[in-house]
Length: 132
Image (cartoon, rainbow, N blue to C red):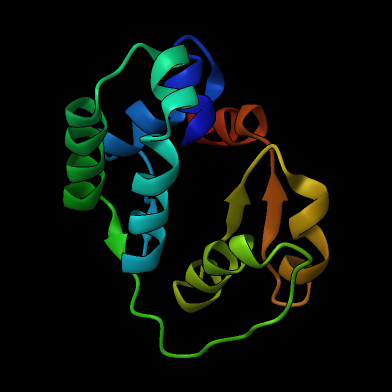
């Protein structure tokens, strides 16, 4: 999400656009959306993206309308080195995700692998979606 708003011409934004148009299913949980809001509205991200808080809120609203909401029924913590990444992995596990899309592959691979979830870069994900 951060990469998408900071680099509107990149693979992350292209994936966001494809998810919003229903070309693939994105998963969200309540905790994940709240984390996205907290991170995306930080001054450093708003400054670089030239967005306003209301722009971020509209984007998150659109994501919430199109994504599949995952109810976290099982907590699997701790699995990862960074506790802030745990909610991403939990949404992926509980939502039976095929993959976690991130530039932060090293921090997710061990935990995700234990649950049969691939960890791929935005450009790899974009290739997969475009091949469908």
